[in-house]
Image 1 (tube, rainbow, N blue to C red):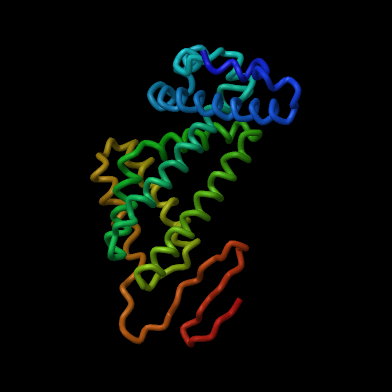
Image 2 (cartoon, rainbow, N blue to C red):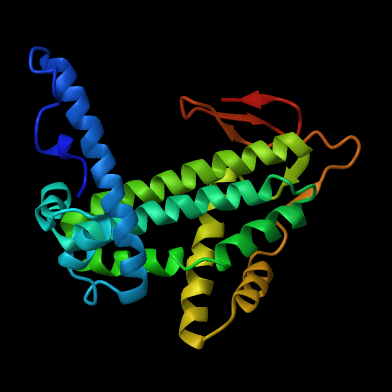
Length: 241
């Protein structure tokens, strides 16, 4: 079974409540992570209705009561699994695109990685579920906000790094990419299309995202700093904030 630290104090720490609290929180995070790790593949394979709390507990070597303790309901666990998997996919797409040297290579790496995974279809199921369970909507909203903000930052970083000229602001590019990904993948799953077909369709719909700058081109990209303040070097060389 999972670490007993979740259920009882650590030996030798009875006299230090702060240590007990930290150890308990650490054990709790570990247990939550183990439950998510166990639940995700079951949900993806069997769906929400085909997966029981008992199944998840057995896969995690945990107690069913621990699932309800940490997640309250199976539906809440499902949504959290889908949200986490989507952010993992976003990280993987960014890593896959790091080796790109041209805007076309960059977009292709992103599209190829996204369409090779079923994480977006999994997340779409969570979106449908939250339509009936509005108490779960805040987690989805935070996930989408993080998806776009980190995507925009990663894209802006690549544009600056390679000296590309972006055809859209980073936030717009990120939102457009993920909106296209969701639409193309869900339609493709319904039609039985292969990952290669999905990738080709995504590239067709996305079109050109950026171009290589020419000599003398002073147009720069809008970049968002750590304080979410916009900084824009305009085409005429002036800077506005």
